[in-house]
Length: 107
Image (cartoon, rainbow, N blue to C red; front, side, top):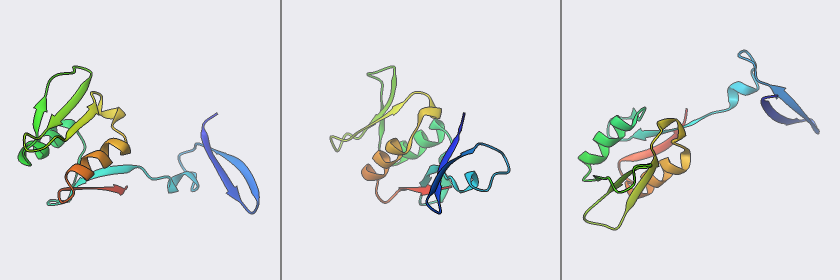
């Protein structure tokens, strides 16, 4: 049973997943945006190009992670190899280390 628990008028109920359900349409997902071009990052290839342009280098130490580092700092960005597992916590890690270049928005 998949769905969202909704609290309305003092009552909690489960609203099951359905394509036309207006309750579920308010659920938003977070996306990483490259601010200079307002481009939504939709793949690791796109993200890697942006990070490399900002001076980040690929770090190949761990095959289970996609990692980037900057020679000028101690910062390290570690991401899951599968882009489907790229979550908001990873996005915020990128934003904190590149404040002027990325932001996280609700889509």
